[in-house]
Length: 225
Length: 206
Image (cartoon, rainbow over all chains, first blue to last red; front, top):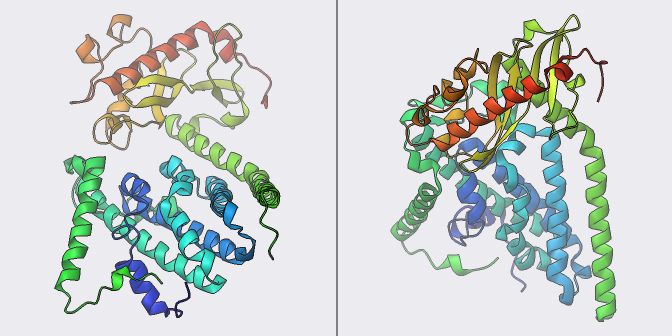
């Protein structure tokens, strides 16, 4: 499916809004809901997922000629699994606190449908640079939702923002946390799975509402790059 | 580069990629083995330093593992010493009966059998309810400080709801009950194997 190459601006708008993988394509919801309990957790997993996307899209685009149709999907899964295993080990070694907090959701990136979707739908059919840009923008969109939802849930649930920033940024970040009210006066629901679902639903509704307010927006959300 | 699209060439190619993938992961695993072990050790040292006041010991507890008794499932543990004499034994029990799975604990005990303190190393208890066993969330875990097998007496080594001396949390009894039980059993373990645990064994046994 040859389409004219998109500009970076167009890609960003697609990845962050029109084709946002979490709010529009509704992919990767399991880690999204489970990990978005704080800004730092969401940012951490978002970065890990984006890194995975970048690596897998690049590798798949490079290996395009090798992907025989009969084994394409197993090959994609193999590549993704190898890359995620590598990232998991690297995080255990050098971002140990964050690795412990995110726990099982790092290896579960393998099952994040966004990775396989972008590899199959885009990277397998485009050049390396395009694939890389696609990964960056789609990953950015997913990370943005993780951070926004994480921020909402952290603020409502624990009264703080950016708590435990040292897990991601090192000891210098210990004081970056901002507290609005005491932790035990938070809305517990925000920290539990039902709160995550409700929060995500509200974000999707908000996005749809904002889309509806825009004058004469052509149905660009149905295009695939 | 295309090969004839036969099952054999497909299988061969898949196998080749599998081998490459395995090779990559194996290399990374080897390269990260040291850093991972060091990260884990550092974490454990920090936990121990939180439990046992750093000024009271001068060795590296991680290099002084306790002996493992042969007659029952052994607990992992380390010893803190000052000038060669043991000042604390840090045992690492696991409470299997948490509300949402096992709870890993660090229990620091003085040679006379009294508790220096307890900390939670890992758990999956409910946020806002069971997670109040974390020191960060509530001072509850400090209610173990200074306790021993005699203080309170055995029948009172339970949560209040069961007739004991330890608070439970509003809305969460199972979690504190599991922790209280595990700490008591650890104190008993210490009592049973006191001689072995406190012996001035060779340093650096690992």
